[in-house]
Length: 375
Ligand SMILES: C[S@@+](CC[C@H](N)C(=O)[O-])C[C@H]1O[C@@H](n2cnc3c(N)ncnc32)[C@H](O)[C@@H]1O
Image 1 (cartoon, rainbow, N blue to C red):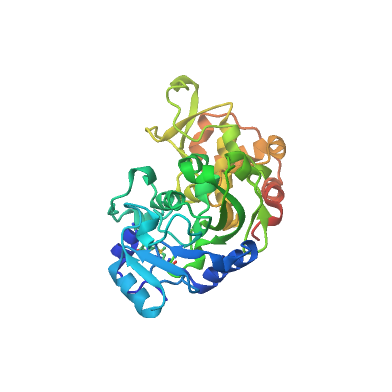
Image 2: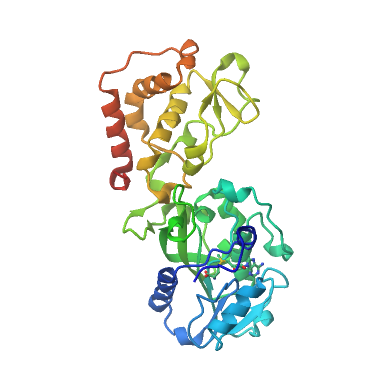
């Protein structure tokens, strides 16, 4: 059942996108596979909506949305449901659980979906949060709250970007220090009814165990992510353009006289899909391109055209590159860019490139993406 009692604005404010049942089933199959004496545990969903994740005798749910909680109580009278802000005064006693109770947290906490332009236009209401779980992203606050409750296991859906973007990963603070991702599946945001189908982003169903060792970014970099569609990847398997060029404005480092072109700030692949690349005007969001790194920016410009061949699970990744093959094809990339932006011709030197340029580019992207190439 979806969150049909809410209007669009409230849906955005509460982050209410209820989870289809087949994804709830996936969460429970992780619990069944990984936890030996499952019946010893209390199952909690601290942002439960209509209670779609509540199963079994020892389950409890909470939500800030009064109507959702009322519906949850009606739908499953045997489960305990609390109406509350789960990020404020966080403690086990909120759920009538003592220090010895064994706890598993399940669910799909709300998050600020910054990948959706439309939703960003709606001003988000901020609910009070305990200081030790404060974060820019409400989903990160929820993960921190699971640590504060000292859950033994956590199996929830959240954007993959929390783990793969280094700055986000660091913001997981005490959660990443105390929990380790030991199993998971990556699915597309498109699995949610009502989500944008044009720009899908990866969501992970993460199974975390509370372990003293926690995890560091190297662990994530070499972690083998498996997708729901049966593909697998690691972050380390790709080289990215961040090793060769800056993604951010560099006005202090590069002089105007060295500059041959201007390029918009880059973020991840999904952002590039919507962003402009080369621009004739400089502003505070543009990067100064020199004649030495110009081919790499052409690379990004051409990469943008090939985004339809990149699967959703790389949507929040950095732009990948095979530098060795690219080095042999630089002129092909440069020529392709000049065709699109003829003004650049006056500021850079262009060598005539081979006649089979288009085929070479297609072959390059097929090789780069390998089994991940979307045909
Ligand atoms: C993505 S929905 C998930 C609902 C349900 N677990 C499901 O998957 O079907 C997120 C839920 O979090 C609730 N929520 C948002 N902020 C909250 C808060 N501070 N405390 C408790 N619940 C909150 C929303 O009302 C919404 O029902």
